[in-house]
Length: 285
Image (cartoon, rainbow, N blue to C red; front, side, top):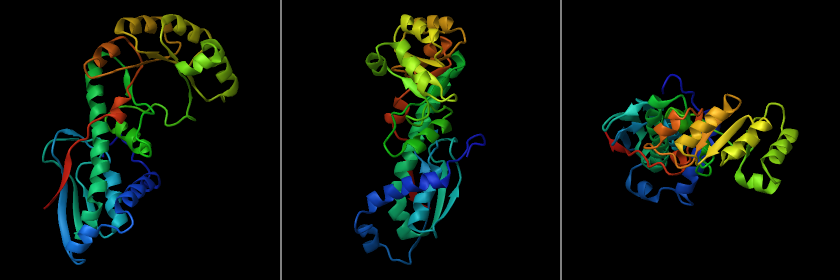
């Protein structure tokens, strides 16, 4: 694992992996493997990359094998946050063949999915880096049940995390503003209710809305679907009084211009909800 990347606690990861295994095993277990592979058979194999990418989900994959049979030995060759090329070995496995074959798909599903999120994030980070100080951050547009792993994968790719849930911070969106009757009453009510450590961010679509948000002391403003020119004007208006976050249809092709506007954060939903997987596979050694 990359030195600056903290692992997720096993206490958090194991229930996610266990649920995935239970879904796959169904009511009768792996009837194919149990019928074909002798209980005494052993297998040595490797999980290796079949394309370029950034690894994430190694711990989840290892836990999948351990939950089926603790006798499976897993050696990590390349951990989370590490760049890989085709043929690079990520995990080496040895132990009961039945257990390895039964856990294979769940382990690979998690590893390929999380590596895809990390790789997509890495691409945005690298595209934005030459153009400004902005951090790439994820959103709550995550796969139900996999948020902790996907948020970790974003960090593995060099990004940062936005809210983990609705209880992290106040984020006033356009529909909140509409129901509240405007930005000022929405922020005023949120400020009266939130604790002193809770940050308040508000989404704005125009520079007039931005001025309203700043007038009542928003901690951060989400500048939604603004052009790079509008973003630059917004950053000048904010003048350090709040964090500036750009959002809306961010791609590798557009992120450089967005970063050059001077915003602090660039949030992107597709890196978790639509990132393509990284192809990794298990082969007998």
